Each structure stands twice: as structure tokens, then as C-alpha cells.
Image (cartoon, rainbow, N blue to C red; front, top):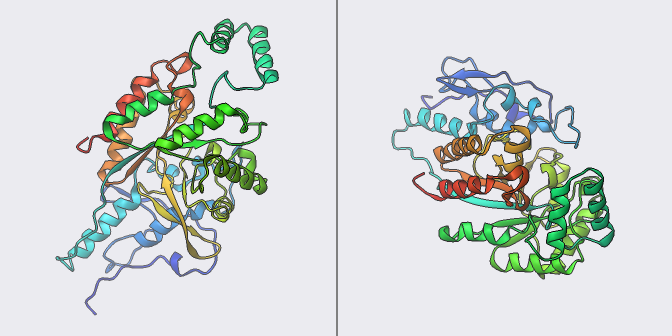
Length: 385
């Protein structure tokens, strides 16, 4: 009838999850999936199916091999295989769709977003040496002695005797870096019992209570659910209730330890516990846009076929990714950060940085990374870039 025609791939008409393998292709230099062939279609691919596939994390519901921590591996993602993980492609596809529609409806206008920066800090270990039980402190000192780690042993003794500051006690530095920009920092605390990969200081420690109440008085503290809570939901309940009791308020924000997400169970569990914002949507092994998005979006439960109240904030970059996986020097890390911020700015998105208090001690293997953090904050906070 003379109206715009967009050939549908068919994905959005399905009523169940069907194994599929969208083929990567190219359109005017843009990576695309769900290519179509009808000559009258305003685009040679289905941007609605493509966007839904990435944003819903459809591929994570399909059979796949998990990594050592039970996570969906980046290398099995279509974004990695199609070499577009570094691009917020859903925004790019939306722009192509708008451009095609404006050829038919010239007065059509989009709804531009506004770029913003949101700094977040994970506290896996509140302190390196302080506030730990005597048995753990003694065992740590013994390990230093046995393995000849004389610097660590000396540092441990100096911290415990009050001669120097604990290397993980970087909270004042972090807050002061953001003060000139008037930014709020989101802190995510591992508030779990000791064991395995969950080994923060005791949750009942007076030092823990003082620290968290202090941080929450100026900014916001959220939950960093333990790795073990994924297999034992009752632990998630206990951790959130414990933090809520300590801070005397409801906890509504969280980020998964090790960025472990199991679709859809992780998000269902969080919703059941009252978590309304999650900051786990990223890969630990590589920077990029896991869901093709650079702005927050609601979690869509694919099995229930419904939009939920849980808002997902994509995390495109993490300090540990640059240090441990990519093995970047501080100088190369700054370049990677600049590239990522530029990608987010290009679509007026939300840049969420993920760092740890322990990586900002400016000593040991993290020597020189305080400078990186300060430069990142300056770059990400300046609206004009």
C-alpha cells in the first residue's frame, strides 16, 4: 500500500526458544545479523530481530559450554565471532532504521539520549590485612614467610602496627577523585561468609560496619552477591538481608561476583530479593558490549515472554580485564579506555566503569594504575570528551 516494508526474519513470531545460528554479514560497513533478501525491504536485514536477539541474550538460553566459573563464554557469542563486540551495534541498527524510515517520512524524529558517566567500585576485599580474624592473619604471614615474600610480610606488619595505611584502603582517594565532577560512586560489597572465591573480611566486623555506613552516607552501597549464591539462593537472601539490616534501608542495586550470570535464573533470583538494578552485563575476559547496548534496558525473561522491572546497566570495561586478561600496560590501558568511552559517546550512552578498591593502591602489580583511573574519570566526565 505504499507504506514502508521491512522483511521479517521470523524470530519475533516464535513462541518458543529455537536453536538458531544467525549469519554475520555487512551492510554499508555496519556488521549485521539476520540478513534478508526481499528487494522491497527498506533494509537488507531485520534490525528488530537482530536487536531482540542480542538484548534478550537469546544465545545464552541456547546450549553452550560454560567456563570454569559457570559463565557464558565470550568466544561463543555472535558479537565476538562477528568481530563487533567492541561496537554498540543495537544503537547503530536503530540509526540505520531511522534513516531508512525518514526517506519515507522526512519529518520523523528520533529520541536522542544524553551521555552520562557512572563510576562503580567492587569491594571484594575491604582491607588487605586489617580486620581479619587472627587465624587468617597468622596463616597469611606464614605463607609470606614460607614463599619468601619479604615485601608483603614487611607491609603486613607495618599495617598491623599502624605504621602505614592498608594498601586496599583507597576509599578517600576514590571519593576525592570524583568530587570535582560532583559524581556519585556506586559501591558493591561482597557481604558473604568466608569460603572459596568469597573471602572478604567478616561481615560482622566492626570495621566492615563503619566502612559501609560511611560509604553509604555519601554515595550508595549495593550488594555484590557471592559466587556461591548462584548455586545456593538462600545465601543470596541472607547476604541482602544482612546488608539491609546493617545500612537500615532496602537494597535495590547489585552486581554479580565474577560477573557470573546464568540466564534467566540469576535475574529471577535478584528480582525475588527486591533488586531492581543490576550492573553485571559484561565479559570479564574482554571489553565490549555483551548485549550490543550502551544504555540501560529492562531484563526480558525469554522463558516467561515478559518484560520485568529489573533494569540492566551494561558494563563495557573492567580494570581486571585490562590487567589480567589483556595484560595491558597503564599507557595501553588508557588507550583502550579512550576507545571505549568514545564508543559510548558516539551513541550518547551510559559509560559504566568497573574498578576495585584494591587496584588503586598504586603498588605492586597495580603500580601506576591510579594515574589511569584519574585520567579515565577526567576523560569520561568531560561532556565534550
